[in-house]
Image 1 (cartoon, rainbow, N blue to C red):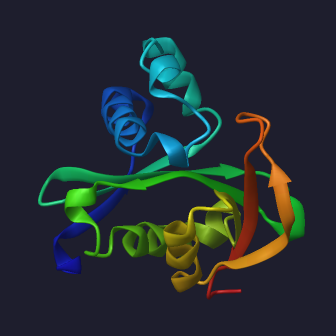
Image 2: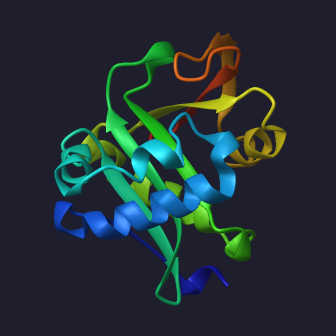
Length: 166
């Protein structure tokens, strides 16, 4: 079914699309994110557009339905990371069809041109299914769990992945 999955990068004029999938992700899996539905549902157009200045937003769709998202932020990070992956989510109705793999294939294709060769991310240390999914994509746990600045009392595990072109 991977052939039905299409991955693309959103542009600032597509901010309503970003808003819709992000809010859907927060409603479905609030426990997985640092942000909250209550806060982000109050963002106005200007705030949503401003997010595009900081990071690239990827969406994977299945037969025209936006089914997964993530963002990529260029930075110099821990363990040699050249970018940070965040906001990863897939619609439960479409899990298991290769959405995350398709988005990371897009990252790999763009890696040299966009300095995305070493990807870092943080995942809650008790989110075992996400950790397993990231490991299948080639991520490796690095360092000790870190305390969250957004959710006091919670800890996240840093993970690193290098593109195959490295």
